[in-house]
Length: 286
Image 1 (cartoon, rainbow, N blue to C red):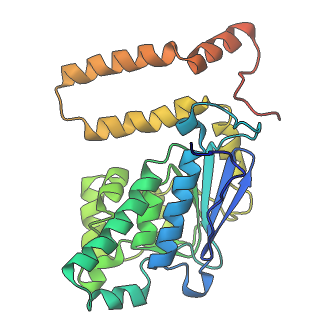
Image 2 (image 1 turned 90 degrees about the horizontal axis):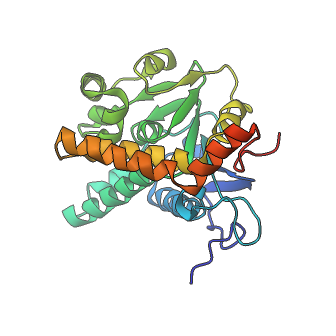
C-alpha cells in the first residue's frame, strides 16, 4: 500500500526545489543561469513534484492531515529563481528537435502536455509569482495557474511563432484563460506584452512592485475556504470545460453535485460552524 505521508519520499530534484510549510508547498525553478528554461530534466522534475503534491493534497486524500498529524497540502506557490520566471523551452532542446524522429518529438510533446495538464488540473490552489520574462512554455505555466501575481515590468509572450512553430501544447490552457480572440492575436503576433496588458486580458490577476511575501494574503484567504470545496471547484470547472451533453443534462448534473456537497462531511461542518458561530475545522490558527 502506498504511503502518502507528507514526510515520505519527497522527489529528488536538482533543477527545481520543493519546500513544505504546513499546508503550503513552494515550488521554485532554479535554472536561473538560463532564465529557468525548460529542458527535459526540469520538465520531468516538475511533473514528479506535481504528482507528489497531488497525492498529498487534501483534495486527493479527502482529509486534512496524514497519519502522522501533518497537514496535507492545500496551496502550491510556483516561482522562478533569479531575474526571470521562465524563458520557455531550452534552446538546446529546441535545436535537438530538428535531429529527432517524429516519434521522439511526439514523446517530448507528450511530456510537455503532461506538465501543463498536471498543473492545470492540480487539486491544490495554485499561485504564480512572475518577474522578468515568461515566454512560450513560461506563458503556458502562467495560463495553468489559479492566481498569478506579477511585477509591473514583466514581459509575457506566446513566442513560438517567431521560430515558425505554434503554441499548440500550451494552447488549450492559454485559450481557456484569455479566450478565443486574445489567444489568436497573441499567437499570431508572438510578441511580448507588458504586465498591464496581461492583467487586462486576464492572463495575470494581480500586479505588485515586490514579490516578497505577496502571496501571503491569498494563501490566508484560501485557507479559510473548505479545502474540498477548493478542489471540487476546480473539478467543476473542468467538467464545464469538457461538457458535451445537453444543457438540460448539465442542469441536472449540477443539482446532483450541489446535493452531494451539501451532504458531505465538509458541507455539514461548514453549516454547523456557521450556525454555532465558530471557526470550521479546516481553518488554520491565526
